[in-house]
Image 1 (spheres, chains in turn cyan, purple):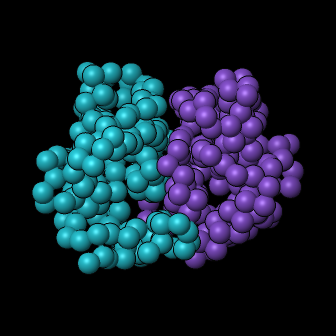
Image 2 (cartoon, rainbow over the protein chains, first blue to last red):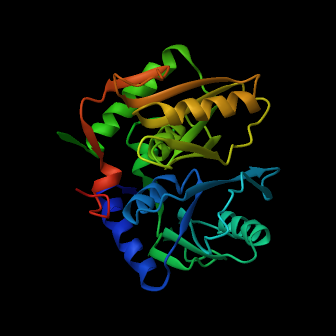
Length: 154
Length: 154
């Protein structure tokens, strides 16, 4: 089973996620996990008028069928004045990327409070984000993956 | 005069821009200029199935009314195997960000061919991107700036 996730859905959901975050966190900067979190971070940055939108790369490389290695690159420079930072991705599948990213960020910036936000999360994920909008009940085709009919389109 | 630029316009235009680029460049990695180039880079990365999507921060700080200083941060790490890299932003106004970004990227990676792509460019811009889809004839309200009705909405 797969579900198409349209721009219309996204527009509504980003607003709902932003409102959820605002209830107990005031981000001074946003970090997008690439690639999945890019569009979400872009919208949130504009919505809150936060110029400090950054990115971090997290990629899994399969070394064999059962194991995969997470590689994290391009840890952004954070202004020491920014103590509250929101890390965003579009979906938490296993949670491995989010966990890895937060681990390196906390290591590099021990004084910063990092919170995580996502549109979707798998119930089975070992990582629980601070702000989750919806449970992912099937495979989701995000509009940025399929609307152009590129190589990722089904 | 201002023009609303919808997601429907964007979807069509990203495809047209991608096709323009493909005619004489085969990017192995994409760098988004933040924040403006984020959604564009996300879509292009998925369309071409390029996992190597990175980000760079370029911000202008006005020191007085006539002068502004460009600050560039978070130069991404590039895999030495990637010799053709596309740098993207949504619009070229003065061209200062693009010029600054390309200058630091070329300095850091002298062996890499960087090409620049944008959806819109001002005719008066001192910088000419390699791939430009449309001329910006008025102020453009991009959907990511206004659709959520946030602080940037008119």
